[in-house]
Length: 141
Image 1: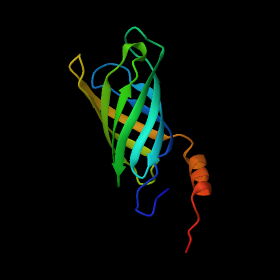
Image 2: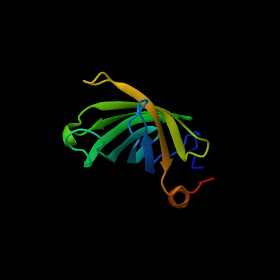
Image 3: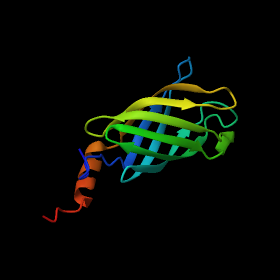
């Protein structure tokens, strides 16, 4: 577990994700790169387009949000690639060792909106933990 002096997890790193719909559509895999600055989250995602004119191509989005204790919230805003320009709200819970985030996504768009579950897992968790520990400043006590 990577914790700061204030007890929060550092969520910086690469995450493999999957979001699902409540209907018969296939789940969509994505990759997120998170940058955590004292609980403020930024980053990017990319995923294969599962519908529309860009079917099979890649979609790109930016992330902006926050986390405190075990709760994380962020907004994913697509950059317009393939005609996707809407934003999606994510609300989730970070597991104890900060290797998984589970929760719900919600969107309100021109098609009426939707919701569903999502899961994010830290990519190469053990390797990332070694790197974070090596880069963490030594205690000055």
